[in-house]
Structure formats: C-alpha cells, structure tokens
Length: 169
Ligand code: FES
Ligand code: FES
Image (cartoon, rainbow, N blue to C red; front, side, top):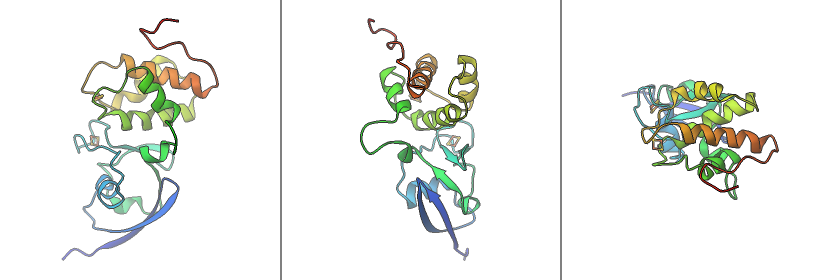
C-alpha cells in the first residue's frame, strides 16, 4: 500500500493541508481535494496550458507537478484572482473583448496574462503573443485574446482603453 504524504501549501492566501500520494498531481489535488475547479485539465501532458496556475510568482502547469513537490509553495489559482465582487480587470477585459468563447482556456490565459502584466505593465503585442504561446485556445484565433490583454494592461495602468472592436466610439 502506498504511504500517504502529508503536505501543506498556501493556496489563494490560505494555508491548506492535505494527504497525498507520490503519483497524485497538483491539478488533481487542487480540483478534487480543495474544490478549485476553475483550473482546467485539458491535455494532461503539459501541452495546452489550460491548467496554468501561479506558483511562487511564476506560471506553472499543474498537470505536470506532483502535488508533493508543491509542499510549502505559494499557489494562486483563478479563484484567488477573482475578487469577491465583480471581476479582475484581466477577466473583465476578456469579457469586454469577446475573448471568452467556450472559456476552457480562459483561466489559464488569465493566469499567464497576470504574470506577464505583474512583471511588465506595458507589453507589446509581440510580447503578449510570446507569453501566451504555451496556452492553446481551441476555439478561434488569438486576436481577441491579445486585444483583451492589451486592454487589461491599459486598465491596470490606470488608462482608459479604446472601445472593444466593433463598438462605436
Ligand atoms: S492540462 Fe496541463 S498543459 Fe494541458
Ligand atoms: S475559448 Fe475555447 S479553448 Fe479558448
């Protein structure tokens, strides 16, 4: 019988404890143990970015990390980004720009965008495209997603962004 491993990690600002096994992945712990189902499991192989969380300030693929390796880590999931009322400016921009189609990739995109904008409040479109290159959207091209990140960057800088495409000025 596989011995359980007790682990402790900070999740969305709160220390949480759990018992895990060596083969259990962080994404499964977050979703099944902590009920944080906003983090999506797509490919399960590190290819799509749907499971992106922020681990110690950097993006991380929760489908590749054994839960036990996250012992002591500081983890932020989409639930921790979302304020109690309303939406985070990045989430709001995704909504305003119509960048949420099926929405499956959206939490991972938002987490990647947050790390990008935390580090650089004025990224170019090329830098945005590079940052999200590991996040796959199956629904459409990336035009609206890039526009949403440009928009949220402006909002976070305290500027008034241009109206979304298709909206009269
Ligand atoms: S589910 Fe983790 S990268 Fe696709
Ligand atoms: S909105 Fe459907 S995968 Fe991106």
